[in-house]
View 1: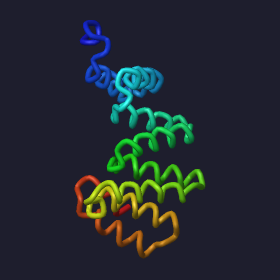
View 2: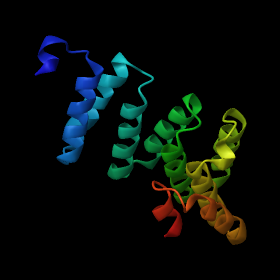
View 3: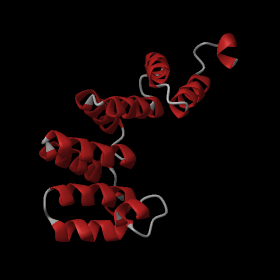
View 4: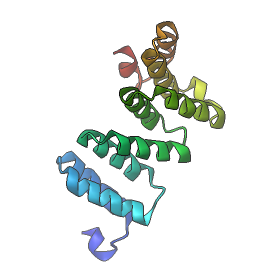
Length: 153
């Protein structure tokens, strides 16, 4: 209803996109996110939703592109970083993930102590068959409410 009065109201468009996503209507969610990105090209939530939708559709190259764009703007977006590491592993391009881990480490002063970063770095080392380092990174993340359960599985 709010969009009838102001069709470029980003919070309302985001709420509608989330509603479509929860309902499983990926097509409408995608079009809503594209509209949001036209109005606000740096909107992280819409960019993340677009990447997730592309991932669900199986379009891994486009999903990877959206995650990379998001991390170029904000390297401390740890959910995007963890998803990118997983995507790049599946695509056989894991060495690219190291660039984004280093970017995050250099731009974010406390990244090495953040559980989200430790989880993403643990995934990277796990996929690189460096099990000891991976376990060490996952142990740093396991006490966190958000990342702990993921680090233990």
